[in-house]
Image (cartoon, rainbow, N blue to C red; front, side, top):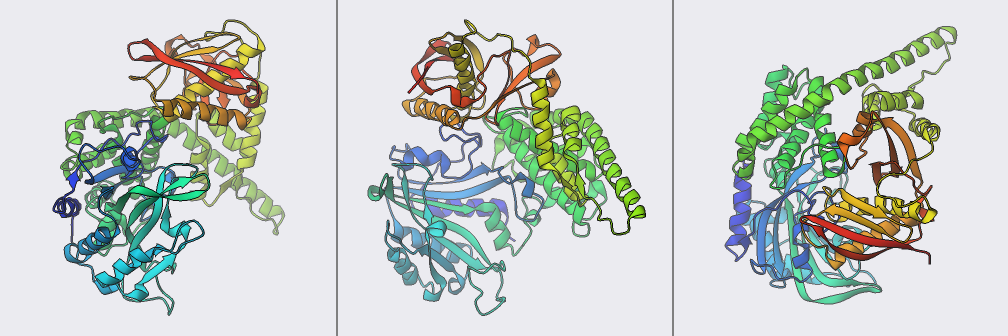
Length: 607
């Protein structure tokens, strides 16, 4: 059995022997330059260098990079989904290209990892009107000994890499590598395109040889190679496993949860799902809190994602009959036994990480207990109704949907997220009337509309000033998206002519960042999003993700404004009714306001 430590070491040593510099891993937390909260791929931190900037370590690089992807949090609980994972990568920045890369990947797979060359399969780009068929890569593969019948030409959706929606960025065909899990085809046409799961993709080499233009693609002067092999997936495959939670990255954690709960992972389906969720979500939480740019659970940005992960882990931990001490036991195993060697900062921050996990568990317990009780009342009410109706009408079809108003009450009164209600309902074989929830939410919003009072740096009550105030909310949300989720308002002044917004940030914004912020604000204006106001208890507003400038200056009840899911702030108002009223947003100036504080001046233009 190959361990995660051995696999990391083999990868780095292989490429170091071929002139690559191990550049190590960077923070999991996005730095704002790519518009995402977390690093979601090994190549993401290297994008400036793939675009032409000189890397200080040279033209041949390699590393093992931690990544966090949370778009499918709800899928975690099966055998293969994870929110944290590691990508083994290597890069050529205008150095070697297809011939060397195909040979090295082949050597790694066969000579280092012991795969049989006759079983290796590979896919290449079949070509289209914009770029030719990649016969060059296919010929190199044949020369290495890969059987011609194991080389597949696939279309752009399978074997082409580019950043969607961009112009001027590098792109090109990719070469994906596959291997069968076993030697038993499901039928005569069982190949890499078969859905039976016999073949697994073990990695890919991207050849960035084109630049995307307005009208198609043009050849790049300096061609790059971007390789990505998932460590978690490779570890699973090399050990002949079909359950990612049985590799050494999780096995000792699962065994600890079995010991603490008295439940057996392989014999109890519900317990197995719960153990997987606790293990995955606590692993990711440990990594995010213990990161060099570590974050804490909060109601906004990356902190909200962390809070969602931790609270989902807490709920499933309770399903195992365990308390918060089990979460800390799990975290300790990840820190001390599994990842401490590869990520030594985790060991340095161990006490801090465990303390924050404990605090979040304590915060969530009361709300979770109350919400679950109310949820059980909803289920009981539905069961009693079905029982009563069945007695009087044998043909009655049992109702299996929790009413939207009931789900909204869980949300409005107990702070219970709709997603949690939906997940718990599914566990009981029920659904939730989500359309009814939305209708109840909208009705609540309409009832909550009252005359707004003017606060927050507005000079007057004129329409132009009001629109600029709404633009300020969009500006702050755009800055958080583009530059940093930790940005918050440090002051503002809004007149009929312009807005002035001060915010925390350690350096001047680049021209690219300013344009991205401006474009994002105008995108939201173009979407003509309704601006929704309601009044909430202060603690409830915080729980729903609304942010405020001076937390100690709010009363028991606050007025909050939401612009879709893009901006949620506590504010006195006033605001536009919908963003389409604002016109075109234009940044005039960005400058220093004081130490660590930047200032943006902007206007709205009617075009």
